[in-house]
Image 1: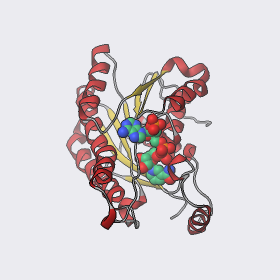
Image 2: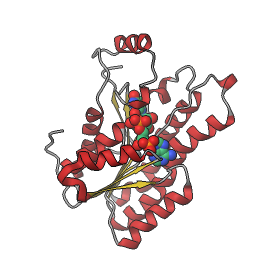
Image 3: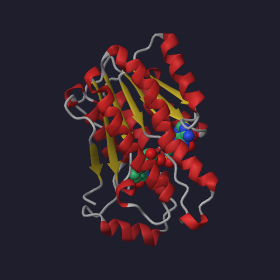
Amino acid sequence: MSTTYDFSGQHVVVTGGTRGIGRAISLAFLAAGAAKVHATYAGNETAAAELKTLAGDAAPRLETHRSDVGDYAAAEAFFKMLMDRGEPLHVLVNNAGIRRDGVVGMLSPEHWDAVLRTNLGGTYAMSKFAVLMMMRARYGRIISITSPSGKLGFEGQANYAAAKAGQVAFSRSLSKEVARRGITVNCVSPGFIETDFIADLPEEQAKAYRELVPLRRFGKPEEVAHAILFLAGREAAYITGATLDITGGL
Ligand code: NDP
């Protein structure tokens, strides 16, 4: 991705930063000169290794960490590791997310819990420890990836929609708590983006969804990354508590 952004000297954490949208975000920050990008992931070691290869010359500035965002103790340990090293933190991107679709009447408590724990619980735990670091520095950018599902609701996605709406409410509240410390908290809401996340859509349904999008195509992970870099920039200091739609006009 070509970019004019400059994140030199900045340390960035991207949850779920090894695959899909997160991978594009990690690579975009590296391309924009970030001093360190920490990309977390759930368990796909192959994707994490691929990212290292894709980073090329920037690989020494990239670290991948297998760390479950839905595990509060793991989130705490992750930030303790950064603090023990004396590393600063400028940007947190809460990108890690999962879907476990099912109509409510058939939705298992396990699928309810997994989606809430990862998408919303992960945003809470990672943001909590990030703001503790950022408050001391009186600077920070927190950006969470929500979804139009959180605003519109989609059949079979009550758990996912609840988690995604929760991320917006969480971010708006947090933005007010930390505004005076130079920390901004925002969300981006991508529409259909070409990643493994929607690879299970039957072709007929994908075609129907594409026709719903005014731009008549699905988005690319790099197009979401561009918006993240915009909100993460020092220049975006007056944008907080906002949600930016990246939906092709949906
Ligand atoms: P992918 O499934 O392509 O990638 C998900 C990434 O998140 C992977 O790196 C995965 O790790 C990681 N991850 C999943 N669970 C955890 C966990 N518990 N702890 C740490 N990391 C985890 O998803 P996308 O890139 O498509 O989606 C990224 C975000 O964007 C999600 O929050 C999703 O809800 C949101 N979104 C996506 C849309 C789309 O159309 N693609 C539309 C709207 C929102 P691993 O590789 O180890 O599994």
